[in-house]
Image (cartoon, rainbow, N blue to C red):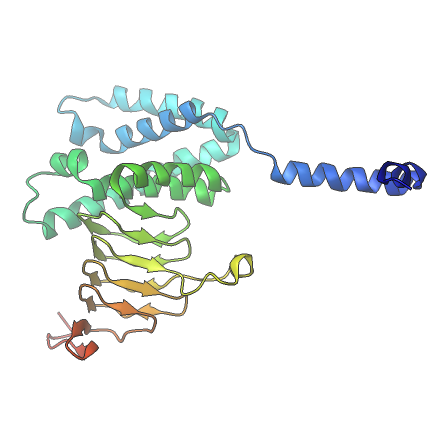
Length: 278
């Protein structure tokens, strides 16, 4: 009997169940129709609203309100009324986080001359801004939209931050090209990363079995990680006030107030000598 014949001889209820399963599988796997122009209009206006006082010398409260009105309308079309309200309500805290990054860059980079320069020129600030926007969308259940926003920054800056990562205040990326931050990474406050740093998963051989598990490291507050250092694993914790030297490869946790560096005999970890109370 042919495949078609077998199907025709089945009981109606079985046929119905098969059709439902096929339809559900189709709905799960079909592509979504994303309005890319609308999405990046939202991103552009969000960036403008958050940094308006930095990039335009003459601006008014009226101009800000007009941008908010446009954002409200556009996000409602993009993600629906309820999520749009949550997106708009997140903007004040998002601005606070971005100004924390601006402060960190101005305090930590002697090459920076003004907040406006940082907002307009620094690839790290661009990537962090897109990450903050993408993270809001990710938290609202719009994972693909969040990825589209961070991948836009990835293409433009070479900095790859998954929107699912949790990143605290005063986050500073210096130079930035080649940085990779995975979906389940946790970065706390006052962390500084240099170019080429990877916060990655220890192994992806199990593939989808790892989905939903913490796969990427935790970086505690006041940590500096220098260029091309690679830190892997969901159980790996870099203790607070630690400095990780260039080209270090780590799959194990590091004590707080440590210096980790690549010496002649391999990777070494030594305690910092400065007073822990300052």
